[in-house]
Image (cartoon, rainbow, N blue to C red; front, side, top):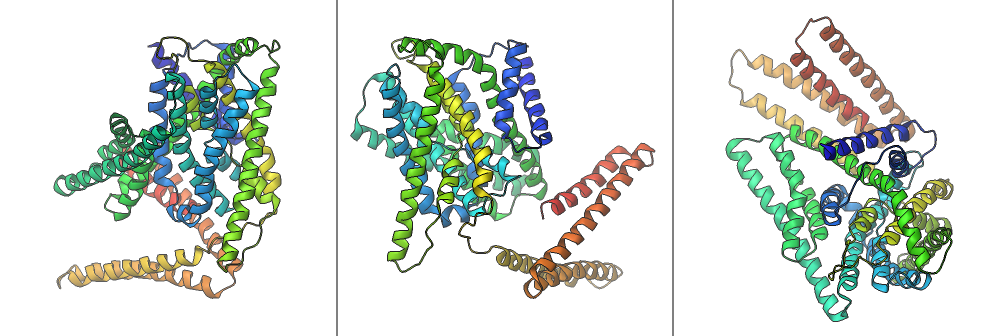
Length: 546
């Protein structure tokens, strides 16, 4: 019962922090508010949360990384794959080596393998916080694609590096040739397991749906189990469960392009996964806040053991590590961008040299978040010989503070750096989107006409003719709207579409209000009203996301 109450308190704290974030006039990253909520909980109650590192890691990371792989825009990922790989692989190794040696030099009480583990887990970035800021400060779309792609790949590379460092700390041994071979097996086998699990599950779901029909609830449950299945199978084979979860998510996005899943299943599944992502991310940061006072106390003792009597040295450590991370990232981005421009010019493709603000924005946007938190909290409690894992509490404290400082830096510096900044634009997607919408509308008209032609002559012929006529008029009006955008003034065309959208929204909301009023007056049963409201909700959702 105590565990259940603790879980309910944490979930309630996540809900409250989400509401607070929406009410604040300034764009403060949600994780900071959730950490603050956790600190308040620790001040008024002792929940007695004891974290099992392995369970914490398995419970939180596979679904979050699976969802990142599933939802990340693949076209944007592959369009800037060179820049993304520079950041996600090269910068990770650069950060692990640079920060690892720096932390060990600055804090001799942290052994070198543990310093490398800390550096590895500090290397992954988290675009979730940047996305929250982007809701109020516009982040260029191409920059957001690069940050999302970097986050997806450096999550995996950073966690794999941490795995090597922790193994070295546990055993006291490290072999570079063996590490390379192990890395190749971890990566290739993990990716293969993720893709294979998704392929098998998709084929099995398709066969069952064709034979017995599709159950939306079962399909949603299968999607929730998929990342854990891929992770556990990969770990059983001594491969990377993290890469398996990411690969399973990316394979899932391609499997979904067959369009065989029912619309009801997709809508419900998206809602469930949104709630899961919100809950898992939120609980992690609330737990961090709840644990932070105890972490600070234990870390202060480790600092005293290093010879620095005053706990204020912890602040110095945190600021120094953040400064080093920012400097390494800025330097890497600066060099990588110039090399990219140099290669493009050698190939005869003239490109404009990016300004310092773009480099600085890309550097500041590398905020740390959920993956760093889950990874650092998963450090083992004990070594193989039963002794405590060295400097574990100090490493957790440093990582937690780096998360907080990086989020504060992103929320304060990004709006200044991005204001009025132009980023090299990707090819326009609007024209391609309008062309696809036009083709889809034409396909809909043809399908409706085919249904009409298949109806035998009789009493129902006129009914089908009227239905097809109304549907055809609707789709032809949409086609004419897309064509008008090509020839009309762009601003005026968008204004006309926005006016139509606002009128539709007002009408749909009035319709739903009338349905609720009818229920309150007992004019229709609740199940009938629920079905009618669902139709208006779907239409409003479509208009809101248009």
